[in-house]
Image (cartoon, rainbow, N blue to C red; front, top):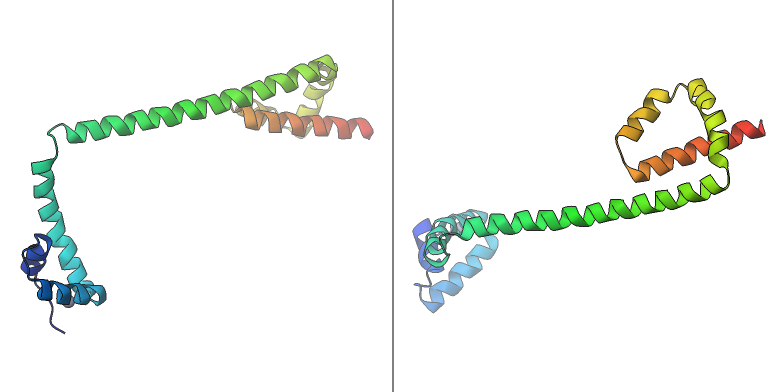
Length: 151
Ligand SMILES: [Zn+2]
C-alpha cells in the first residue's frame, strides 16, 4: 500500500491538490490509520497557524471568561435547586412540628441515637449541610422511632 507523507497531507489540507489525486487520497484515508494520523498531525500545525491569523488576540481570555460564566450559571442553578430542597425540608418540618412529632423526638431521639451509637454520624451529616441527605436521615430516624414505639 502506498502511503502519503505529512507534506502531502498538508497540501491536501491547503486544498493545493488536483481533483483526481484528492479523491485517491480520500479513499486511502478512509482505510489507513497511519495516514489518518499524518493527516491529523498536518492539521494541528496548519490549524494553529490559521487560528493565529484568524482569531482575535484576546480569544483565549474570552473563552476562559465564557467557561467561567457558564460554571457560574451552573453553580447558580445548582444553588437554586438546593434552595428548593431546603424549602421542601422546611415545609416538612412545619408539618411535623404542627403534628407535635418534634416534642416526641426531643424526648425519644437522644435515647434512640445513643442506643444505636449514631450521634457522631448524625452530627457529621448535619454539619455537611445537604437538605436531601438531612431529609433522608430524618426519615430514617422517624422510621426507627416509629418502630421502637411499636415494640
Ligand atoms: Zn496510508
